[in-house]
Each structure stands twice: as structure tokens, then as C-alpha cells.
Length: 290
Image 1 (cartoon, helix red, strand yellow):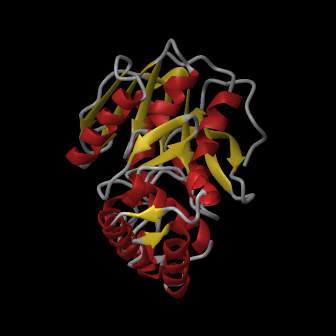
Image 2: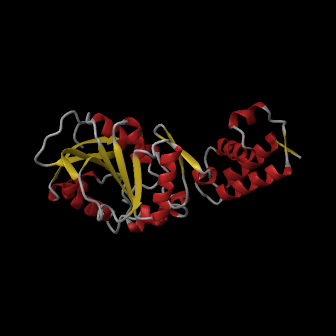
């Protein structure tokens, strides 16, 4: 049999040669997954012997990661806000940058009762919002039925299924009624730029959740045109932005009868969230404008 330490050295070297940063930490995560253990336990027992079947599981996971499959897809879950979420190839992996939308919603100092999430994916935005607003209910829409099914599982996983519903559809085309808060992380990558993204994204995440058309703005045009009929008079929408897209989305919002109330930066200092409202109704307590 092979020891934990030897497998970690082997795995770290393979990951490093594949161009993956922090290779030693990732090797620990993969071996812990194969052993149904924790990275901390591996550090405490580097001489422990690993059974052949566990070595095989580790090698299979290592092969997937060196092919640049996202770590979260291999592990089957990822953290977002206060939640632990199932992930899969039918959705984007939840990213810490998107937590800026939840921060923006909380900073708005409103108490939404109905929340809509357009392009819900794993359900991360809607479920994080519902965790913060215990009186609220929510609806998540995704074009891909398998993504909506995964989001429903995540609602149950985080004990929010009594207040969340997820359905397949094209944006809000089939939705009626109004919402106090609308969240969306739409596809916003320019079509021609997708092939140049890191392999974890370009090869393994769904193109439908990435491709924003020739200028990256197709999804914003579709969403912004529907917001006036969907927002309550005092409601707000919070949209995720790609880097540098604020001015273009602001122009589209103004043409749709919406005004920009503020923005929120991600941990990298990029304006990641844009807060919008109907033009005729002021909303107080919001962050500084974009």
C-alpha cells in the first residue's frame, strides 16, 4: 500500500505540471475526498497507509483535475455565502464575486417578501437571499431544466425548499406578478472571448451560462426590458456585471425606464453588482452610485 504523504507528493507534482496553482492544497482536497476524510486529518497522519481502492479513487479524481475540470465539480459541492450547494456540469460553479449581489441587497435596507432570480443556476443567489430574509419567498428561473432540478435539490439541502420554487423557462417570459427584489447573474462574456477563458470555464462550464452575445449584453437587453412589469413600485433589481460593463448596462437600463441606484464591488475591487429601480420611485439607504 501507499502512504498518504507519498500520494500527496505524487498528486501535487501532477497538478503542478498541469499548470494548476496551489497544487499541494488541491492534492489534499482530492485525497480527502477519495478517503471520505478531511484535509486536516491527512496532515496529522502522513504515514497512514491507503488501501488500493482509495488510491484508485484518488487517481481518478486527479485525472479529472489535471484535465482542468473544476474542483467543485469533482467534489460535487461548493460553498456560497452561508450555504453548501450541490454543483454539476449543467450550471456555473458559484463564485465569491457573486456574493456582492447579496451584500448589495442587504445594504439596500429593504425587507423583500417576494424575490425573483433570473438565470438561477445552482440557486445560489435566491437561496442566499432567502437565508437572510426569513419572511420572504422566492422563485428561480433557468433555461435548463436540469439546472432548475439541481436548484430544487439545493433548496432542500439547505432547508429552504418550503420558501423556494424553481422552474425552467426563458427569463421571465412566462412569469406574471411583481417582486420586491429581482436578482440575476446573466451570461455576460462576449462570444468571441469564451475560448480564451481559463480551461476550467471554457471547457467545463455551460456555454449557455457564459455567452452574452457579440457584445456581451444580449441577456441584459432581455432582462431589462422585462423589469418594469416585474418590479413593485419600491422594488429593486440587482444584476451582476462583467468588468467594465457598468456604463453600457446603465444606458440600456435608462432606455428601459430604470435608474441606477448604486453598485457594489467584489473582493477584487471590480464593480460587480448594479442596483436598479423604477425611474419614478426613489429608494433610500443604498450604496453610492456606480
